[in-house]
Image 1 (cartoon, one colour):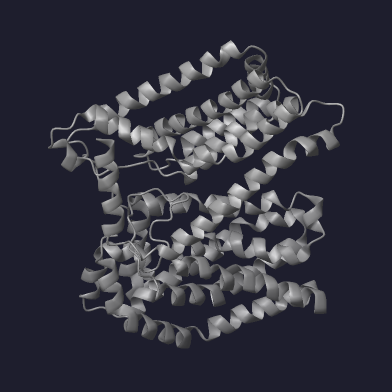
Image 2 (cartoon, helix red, strand yellow):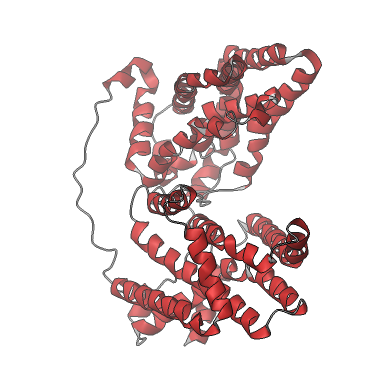
Length: 492
């Protein structure tokens, strides 16, 4: 039966309408996989001699055990945001004479061969072999390595449970953030030393191999729990029942002050607030708003004024970047209908521009308290905000004319690459790297204040030439109009 499942997935992969469209992204992700494999392999080989040289009086194995708690937390977070759970198109199979238990076992077994489960092996095995060559007891080392592998699988199935319960929630990332943040805080403030508990647990398994049964039983328990959880959901009518929701409407009379673009503004605001992916993107604005707190309190960055503009562009333009990079793909679900109406394309794009420009102003105002860390920071943010309004809004609108992938608005936003193409990767160069490079060059040549002035002047020029730039951008969208309709009509 497993052979038939593998055959079906193989055919589905190569016969998919989206096969080949994202080949470049697959190759890119493949290079990243090789990069991480090399990093973990190097870490596994160099870990013992490196720790021995840095801490000659300590046992490298004990040092590694003391950090396993943080590895578990990091692995759990990375899996939640990056690991895709194995899925099958199971509804056609449910009409056949196939036991549901076999389907569930295949899905769970498929999750075991995830890249995230194999990656730690490239560090565990070389480090374990080094321990054997250094004279550590062979049985104890092998059992210790097995314990790490079992913990990796436990994390895999635990992540499965978290994903299953949080998938339907709007802020699906909150449970994992609260769990990991809470455990780390308890350990950091010495309320409960989880790092010490985990370290002693692995030392106990190393010294008394019979205790390996503990992680084995935990793994078995998680597998059984996942099995029952998935089997309960494996019915033909699961997902067919519609949820009854009370629709709440908001008064958007204030948008009428924007004239002929008011209907489009209302449409965008309703789209943002009523859909999971767009709503989650709004909450991610908070990350951008507080982004400077990761850098400004540190004395190192206080001596790097040329770096202020990067934080300023990102902090004031986080909504511009998150929302703007998927224009007009946000409307892909009804783009054909929208384009069949008697509307001016320039008004449609102008509403997007207005929404992004307003967000820049609001985020700059909310970021004014950064002046506490120095007036240069506020000046850099002000110049970055003007640059965002005058330059980056037009750049990201122009880049949107190359979007050819539809977006599922019901999926979560955090680390979701659905609808992402080469445009989204390349657009970061003119959005972030160009102003940062230009500012750094001017800073070293003519000083900080003049560098801010140059950036602000470029923004003002963009505002002055707004009408002409919008005509050029509108023409580009009109030229790509039917290509977009055809692309958005495709089911990836």
